[in-house]
Each structure stands twice: as structure tokens, then as C-alpha cells.
Image (cartoon, rainbow, N blue to C red; front, side, top):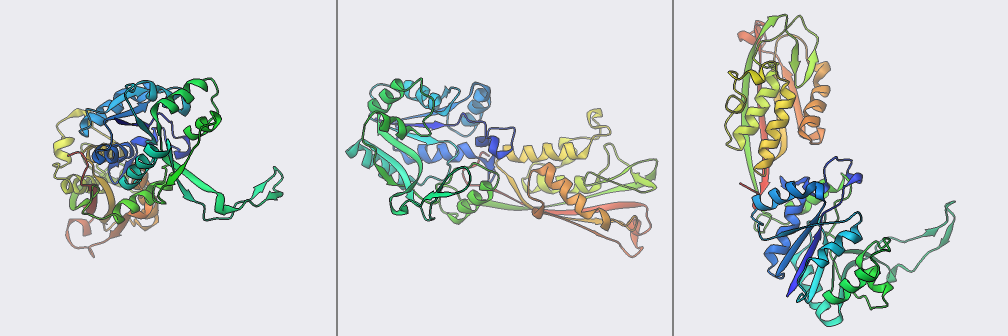
Length: 395
């Protein structure tokens, strides 16, 4: 029997996120779910273990169960990656033949890489996914002085999975359990004097490490097409809202306070632009409207900050696997002039939605003094959004 250990116990400091990076969405689906699905759907592994921290245990279990991975077992890891892998190894039955050790933050590993790695490890005892280096490498001192230029034809960038005979890699972890300095599992085999063989990885098998990796990974998933395991579903939604202008109220639009003699009347802060956007998002996902989720008969939402409600709508959609592609808002108001505040509004919405500002468009127009907006009685907003989710997302 072959087994897989997926290591997901990190903290992701380089992502500048308070959450473990494996919970971050890729096209609306958490990174870890993409990774686990590749291993589960490959049919190559009789046992799959996800190693997580005690802190993430409950959230991880809920996520796996909600995604249809009830059979995947959780193992509590240690203070280092090496300790976490060891915990995963010790949880496997002794009848395990080959074990693939993989980073949970590598969600793009192709099934062909899994298959070829297992095939090679069955013959040679090890198979470490790797790709040849394309760039020239320099070794330099602390002062920047170049010491040598190694021959790049002999240099490789190491990936996961790393596949080994179970008894050998387990023994190596036991021997070096107190030496917490290995940067990958192959190093432990090398320290044991055992041969380590490279196998062909894939340039697209990137590791989600920094925020810049997310859009790259999403583009790779899109490129892989709609016919595969990660096909995309896309929807468009429209939202409209209107509020009356009255004295003694702040004018809040897209979370930005706009100086004016009057403000919008409503149960919450009456942010008409945010309300139209929320309705567009909910409508695109066929999840009702803001009146259903945040009724004006509920005092819990009296004077509510609409940016907080927008974050709730974002999370509601994320729970169904949806992520925002882009949003386009048109605010209709004769007065005040909104152009000086447009860029701040875009930044506000992007920040609360957790997307790049380039995905958010905010425009303002007048009605040439026609209608209630033109008479200065109120402000309205139209919003159009596109959302997407992978074919394998939770529904």
C-alpha cells in the first residue's frame, strides 16, 4: 500500500496573513483542498494524512469534511516541518510500502508527477521531484563578492512530492529526530548514506509562499481548462439601491466619508454603493439579497458599518466556493461632486473584499438635474459583478 503525507502545519509569515496560507482561496477554493483533491482523485494512495497544527485542527477538520474528504485523517504536527513529517510517518500502518511527502501549499502538482515518482521510487527507493535550473547561479560571500559560478547543468530546483520506501524514511526521521535542521526529507536520507534519486517535477508545481504566488497559481488553474478537475463556473450579478438624502447624517459611500451637508437615510449607515454591490454579489451566487441576510427589522444592524456587512457577504460567497473576479459600480448623484473620492472608494472596497484594487471600478455620474437624483433628493447606485468558482468547489 502507498500512502501520502500532506504537510499543512505552517504559519505562512511570508504571506503577510494571520491565517495559515493553506486556507487562502485559489479561485474560491482553499489551497489545501486543491492539493488534497489531486492526491485523492489520483487513486494512487491507500492512506492520506494531512498534518496540521493543534491550533488549526478544528477548522481543518471542518474544511475537509465539508469538501467531501471525511476519509482523510488529520495528524497533529510538531514545532518544525521535520517534526511534523515524523508525526505523519508514525501515524501510518507498518504495511506501508511507499510514502509520498508533499507540501500542502503545492496545489498544482500534476497527477503525472505523482505517478512517475511512485514508479521510480518502487525501482530505486527514492524519487524527489525536481526541475533543472534555468538561471545562472552565483555563490557569493557576505560582502557580495562572487566566489564561484557552479555549472548549472548539475543544479536542480527541488519540489515535492518526495517519495521513499516507508521503512527507510521513517528510520531516517527516527535517527535524526533531535537534529532539526533538514530543509527537506531527502537530506535525512543523504545523512543516512542512502542514495537519493531525482525525478522529473513540473515548472507549474509552484509553492504558494508569497502573495504574488496567488494570481500566478490562479492563472495556471484557468489555463488548464474547463474540461479538467478544476473547470471554472462563472456568473454575473446586478445590484441596485437608493437612499434618501436628509440632514444630520454622514454621507458614507464605499466606506468613505464624503463631506456634505446631508447624508443618506437608512437602518444601517445607508452606504448605497456598498448595498448595491452586496446585492450584486449575492444575486450572482443566487443567495438572496441583503434584506434576507441583514433585515432592517433587526436592531443588530441598526447603524451598522456596511463595510463589515460587505466582509460578511464576501465570506458567505467564499463558503460556497465563490470568489470575486471584478466589480463595476456607478453612483448616480447630482451633488456632491464625487470625483475627488473615487480612488479612495476603490481602495476601500478592494481592502474589505481582499482583492486587488484593479478589480474594482467606481464611477460617478449625474442625471442632468432629472429625477430624484437630479433634484438632489437622494443617491442611487448600480453595481455589476462577475464571480467564479472551480467545478470542484463546495456547493
